[in-house]
Length: 424
Ligand code: IMP
Ligand code: MG
Image 1: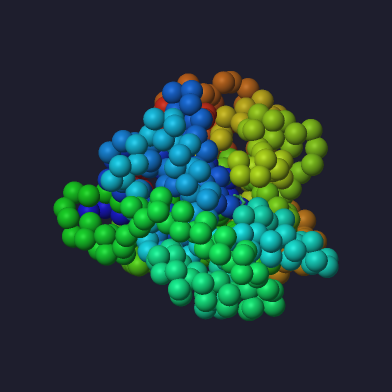
Image 2 (image 1 turned 120 degrees about the vertical axis):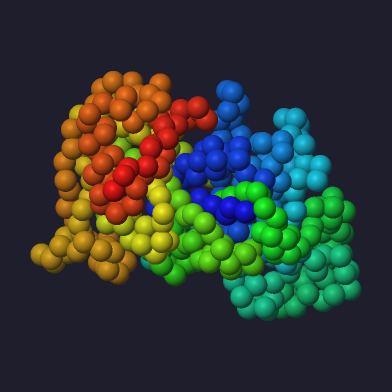
């Protein structure tokens, strides 16, 4: 058995889905362990573009099975719509999807609460995806959440929903309650065949020789509820250890942890971003890299590669390897920058030890690199890249203290350079 984890090392949208997709050809199982429909994983293959939200990216490989762990949130209507859309594109779900019976669900109430809490907040706004993810996780923590397996039992479902509304100091009419229950039962009828015990399944798979499991992270480490740039974070745990929390398959059993970095940095939503730029280069990167949120369509904020945050992420995830994506997007930019320190009140911080207010006020300290002009989308080996690109990659590798194993030079599955392991 081999178990590999691919996770976002920065603020999300690092191109994880492409990496998972690239590795999924060998995977028997692809497993999601956190987040929900707030994620947007874009895959381009044979000129077809797929955007996945809750369904693991492995679904595009006919023989790969997809598992959704207990730590993922299920928005039943959104998941059903996603399945139907993929089926329409010719993708079969027969015996290929299992959703853990423990997974919590997102109710319409959660989206209403999220909308209110963002509009009411004074000062700090988070800029969430408005998918009800935060309120649904909070309710699970408060022990008022409703989980997949709870839908089947109508009587307890009724009292659970009533309790949830009164917990939020809200009322629900008999008619509205009945309508909500009926709707959930409809969803259940459709989803029931996919509900199972992912923990037990992973345990069983782990004892079978030759099986490959790929864990697919959503969002990114800097959005981790605790170790991210709190409170401008998502509400799940996003680091390596979240695999165990979200599936019951301990992170101790992982063979390899791969962190995905973009060759520059992006962020959607609000919060500190020391290397952010808002000039012509940012516009160029946004347009060339199509840096618009795949879930919300929001323009992504753009910045230089942040090696301070990157190294912190490599450390807390105990990365074995890094993957660098979107290198092609930087083609044509004369001068590139990598942030190697945060300057705050005259002192240079080389690790992410500033709090949020300080991070908002700090100035990045950069090392400058020459760019390149040559088209790199057809490069198949590291040696074919322009010298400037290789020097840039080498510098990132040194800053991260982590060997880079793959480099993406275009959106297509084929536009990926496998880096030969160095003899150290
Ligand atoms: P939430 O996850 O919807 O609660 O949003 C919290 C923060 O995480 C916001 O800044 C979002 O923009 C960000 N976020 C959530 N999901 C993603 C993602 O898949 N990619 C990038 N940012 C995300
Ligand atoms: Mg995304």
